[in-house]
Image 1 (tube, rainbow, N blue to C red):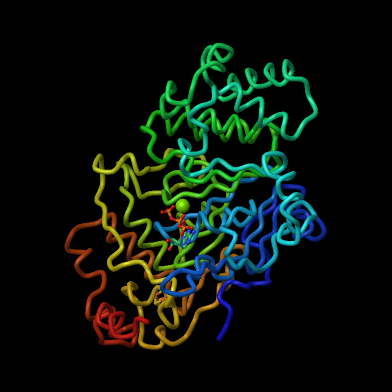
Image 2: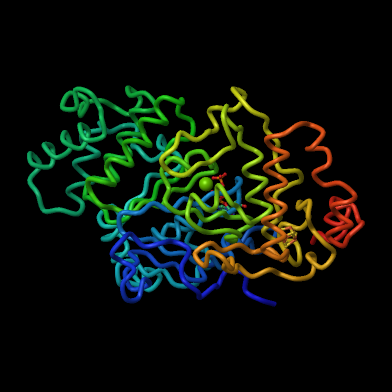
Amino acid sequence: MSDPNSDRGRGGVAAPEGQLDGDPRASALLRVEDLRVQLPTEDGLLGAVDGISYELHAGRTLGIVGESGSGKTVSALALMGLNPKHARVSGRIDFDGRELLALDSQQLRALRGDELAMIFQDPLSSLHPLHRVGWQLVEAIRAHRDVAKAAARERAAELLDLVGIPDARARLHAYPHELSGGQRQRVMIAMALANEPKLLIADEPTTALDVTVQAQILALLARLQRELGMAILLVTHDLGVVAEIADEVAVMYAGRIVERGSTEQVLTAPSHPYTWGLLRSIPRLEGGAAGHGPASRAPRDSDRGAVGELEPIAGRPASLISPPSGCRFHPRCPYALPDHARIDPALAPLPDDPAHLAACLLAPEERTRLWSKEERARLGSDEERAHLWSDEERTRLGSDEEPARLGDETHG
Ligand SMILES: Nc1ncnc2c1ncn2[C@@H]1O[C@H](COP(=O)(O)OP(=O)(O)OP(=O)(O)O)[C@@H](O)[C@H]1O
Ligand code: SF4
Ligand SMILES: [Mg+2]
């Protein structure tokens, strides 16, 4: 069976200008190859991450998106060496010339919070409730730098100021519970930035924040990236957030990357039915469809219910203990053909854009045609939507089976 994600072609993450001379792979700050994380559970071995590969260059942002449980956080924790002790982790993680999976725990601790930092999904549990914010920042700085307490305190105040906390010096005395959710998130960012990391991993940095604070935090990350030149790995289930600040996107389904490419390509010309499903599940705003590249104001989760129609992806996410055979998305895919329950599609470059990859068995030109039909239906009338997966469509694709029934029969 083919390995769906171990593509060895040109990486989906484009280099900034000037880095394409020579071997672009050589200039990547982070290169992840065939990363797998298996977690033993009572019900069996759970393949949370199943052979993902990507690259990220300095000064760039890669968004990792996917539904809940698709393996985003587990894959990010693997970079930090923070998966549970009993996890089986394999593959390669090359970070700035070092193979992270070969480092011992002491070497990893030295990197974490220094060159490599993470904003965790749950900021409350990441800040110590019984210590003042200033103390926690000073500890983060002094863990990696030989600086006097007074100088570290000065730096802590600068950091709070940098992340936009008013009256920063006074706020050093605050306990986490005395701050608002948005301010706690800013403190988490300040902690992560304490030693100016080369790579910042931000796991759902704006989830649970109101829309104004979300926008402020995203703008803050973009500004700090410009000022510090760091790379950002942004983990989110929200395509709107990706559209806002990511240069490149990797779409994860059931532990694998099913589509990868520039944000603009993936959001305006997506080539995988799962990505289409994700796009259908976010609202479109007045004046157009979702996702118009990093510069635009894109719809976010917080827009839900405001404008546009939402259509969640039908069916349940795949089991990671006994994943579906063939294409893992086939039980939920409206375009699945009988063969797709048997054949595992490889992540392959599109003919007209080798930096855009997708793992689907339909011919690329067929997917282009289906996507434009989806787009028309999304922007069009209910009648057009009803005809989207018509009998005529399935016959044309060579199947007269009901896709949902096909999925039910072949799952497992
Ligand atoms: N410590 C663990 N032990 C066993 N299974 C785990 C563990 N941590 C995560 N998992 C499982 O691994 C899979 C991937 O989880 P992960 O947290 O990476 O998802 P996610 O994509 O980050 O989802 P969300 O959007 O909800 O944060 C899920 O099925 C989850 O239940
Ligand atoms: S291979 Fe088939 S089932 Fe999988 S995403 Fe493509 S059309 Fe859907
Ligand atoms: Mg997560």
